Amino acid sequence: MNFAIPRERMVAEQLVRRGIRDARVLQVMGKVPRHLFVDEALAGRAYGDYPLPIGERQTISQPYMVALMTEALELVGHERVLEIGTGCGYQTAILAELCSKVFSIERIKGLADRAVRTLDSLGCYNVLARVGDGSLGWREEAPFDAILVTAAAPTVPHALVEQLAPKGRLVIPVGDVYSQELRKGVLGEAGMRWSDLGGCVFVKLIGDRGWPSE
Ligand code: SAM
Image (cartoon, rainbow, N blue to C red; front, side, top):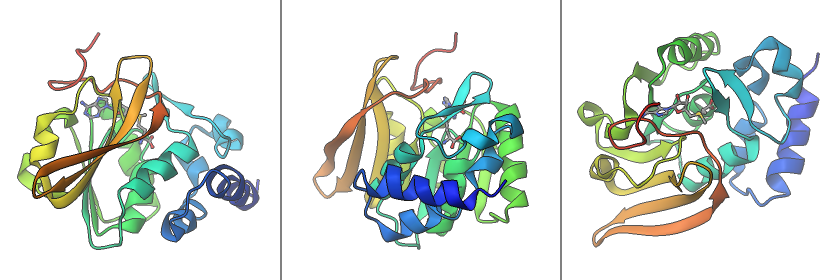
């Protein structure tokens, strides 16, 4: 099956039409093979306007949500980016194309291992991945120019704010288990300046500064 056409259609109909403007984000989302990050049986639906299951009761986010969060990080190419919630690695691959190095943390080893295999097969060599609790950030590698959390937190984990570089951007879904607000914070001299990017529904951030595990 030729996936180039559904991918182009995804960019035009789901991203451009909804207001994604960053040309680099649009170009990369038109290039990264999203269908390789999901089970073969779901490949035909990979460019649809919805999230999909990736196993372990987790999901790959809807393409528009990936684009919105990525655009909000305002990447120009030189940044070191921390991603929390590697999942299948699709968002990681998008970030890897747009910045200098991605540090990605996933709490479920089976997902992390599969994501690393996919990322390696695509030549994403500027990614350092590890298994652990991303709600605490990655102190040894801080500071980061941008931090993206791809799971829903009850509150903003303080450790993440502490690990931002000056002018750093933090994008994170915050709210209850069933619905959240996508929040963007920018670290200025007077502290964090917050704005809201809209409603969203993510799986739980589980960990020390997230939700307890079931
Ligand atoms: N960006 C991912 C992708 O493209 O597939 C989607 C991520 S999925 C919506 C959220 C991920 O966050 C899940 O894989 C989940 O296991 C992970 N997660 C939840 N709590 C975490 C934590 N404390 N640290 C690291 N990963 C976490």
